[in-house]
Length: 310
Image 1: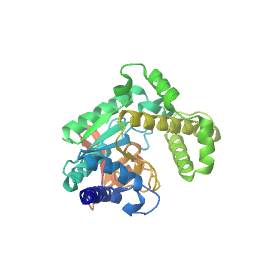
Image 2: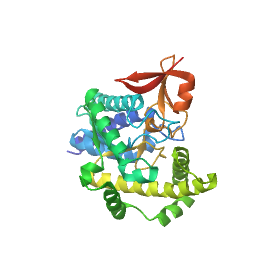
Image 3: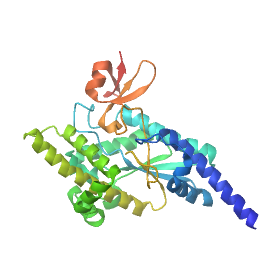
Image 4: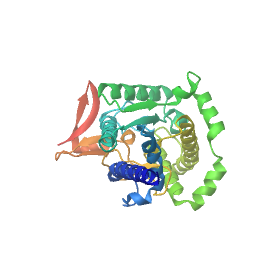
């Protein structure tokens, strides 16, 4: 009997490591660490599924909405960046099935509504983005992906009320976050990154630059509060998952940072940029203004989609 238990444990460990090794080349981080042994939390999360022989479930908060800045994006609907990213994620789940027979699926936890008021994007645009995301998944036959958003939790309530309910129940106090940011390098980097995005994406501010920066610093803490709240809500609705993140994550964290496409830094996402198809076949994310300088616009189904290098 002890031999059987040991063998089962060995098999679980081997399979869990093989699954983690599929994720490591795509890790979004600010370091180059790639040793599976220093990701015990991810190995534990994967092993919970492998031990009982069930398909692995990944949850990925992200794909909120397009940036409101026309300097960065082509419009408010998903385009080539989302299509390629979703195809990549479905392929990652398919690859898991090659090392673990029950396979994997991924829940895209679209978080646009949770902080739409803070990033100044209309809820109608967020709805349209999420609906097109789901339509894109169906059109591309990405059968291992599904979309989960605030509508699945609180139905047809007004969005301001939905946000208020989630914030009241799950969000940490801003004073706690300020104290944490003073001692936690990762949170401080996240706060600075969000502040930068908010500053770049605010297109209708009429005050001074310093006033804009003060406002964006305040809103950045609000975004982190809501992001934490959304993570706790996801954990409540999906209690047993392998938790992914589109933000860089240090090893040892509960979430594993995942990079969707090539980009010049660890923070760029498809919803803050456009795709440039390079002449050598690479696909790279960058701001729309830069892509327009380097390439020509390509449309898909009658809508602007991406740029192709001259």
